Image 1: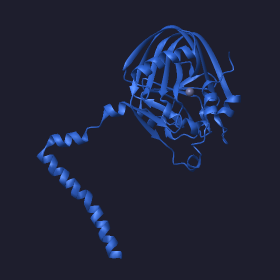
Image 2: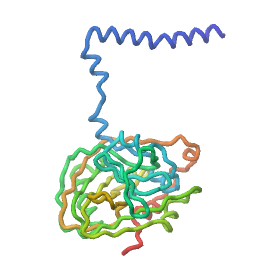
Image 3: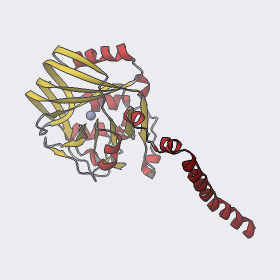
Image 4: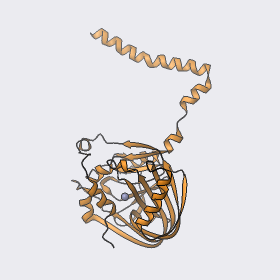
Length: 286
Ligand SMILES: [Zn+2]
């Protein structure tokens, strides 16, 4: 038995050497062939929505970081999310990861800060939509929905709207300590809202098709950051006179899960739609 095992081990070790030798001979025959296999696939990668965990795990109170900010940045230059302990709202714009904290302060997130939930991609403008006379969130969403319906409602979309906003209502939340409460419970006491008027900045949003409602939230989810990068958060309301929306149609999806035992013991098919609606849209201001 022992001898047999040893033999297997040797042949396994020998295999890579053989393959390496074969590759070497290929290189000698045709340089072009080798070049082809070594080339990464940047186009494919740019057209992928990368998601860390599920909105459902976050909503149920899984706030432990799964990957560091440094890793997230490899998967996109635009996006939204949050940080370990829901320590603020995340806005990723032009490759920088911003952290809009519960006290209203915005900072650039440290590379070793960790991420329990996020969606990012690399932004490539596919469509532009001129918008005007937007009085509220529902008018804003329905204008964007037109673009989605015209271009395919079963794709992902990332939107970027830069402009001056007559009204901008955002929220963030205070950092949570363990044992974590579910997000709707945490926000009941620790949500902080900020209303700004006549503020210039960028709305960053993600559209998920309706079949994504078990992994995220179907429809739109927006965050905002001011042009001077001092104000921002999860967007609850807005109005503006004129702005151009730029949309990136994204046909691929990639998801990063945690092997942590607490994460693995969660019941992630549990329906938390009501709690998600509450955490996405509830406001104390009216
Ligand atoms: Zn949000």
